[in-house]
Length: 213
Image (cartoon, rainbow, N blue to C red):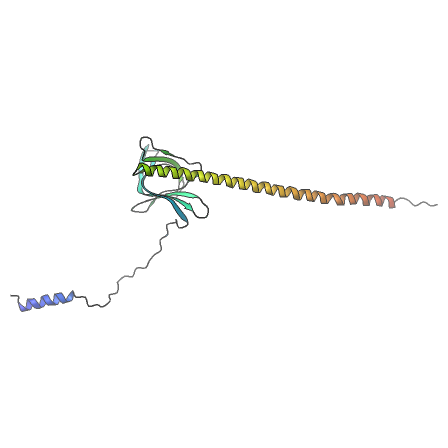
């Protein structure tokens, strides 16, 4: 049988654990902070898990840059597309560059789950010429990436061609308008010139000496 004094201590201990229902204010109040990724004005047209590598020229070997999600992001206004990849755990950017018309991607020799491409990358905060290699979990994902990459590069090429054509058309239109203005201006100058000659002739006639007869 339990000692009365010991039983009283147990009852007090149990009473301390009881929920009184009183509100408990947190010691530290945390406020929500809006996090921006820089991708708010872009739409993801490709989103695949992969592992990225860069070729180290000095060491003449491939070095891993990180495993995560690679994206192709299209800007809502300009239509430009950039390639961005972040490490899955730290979200650190390990690739960040525009997809340009001059770029092409090729399958990595001996591995149909990998491909390589050259780019001027800005992941480290400064432009660097890089040779990237990427490995996917399946052959299908690798093919999807390569096809989308080539499609974007081709679309950017057409966009540049249309831009150049529009610029050329605008220049030709400007030159045409300037030529018309020049012709109109030239026609206007001929009129006073003819009138001046006419006035000059009449002046010479008036200056003839009057006959004294």
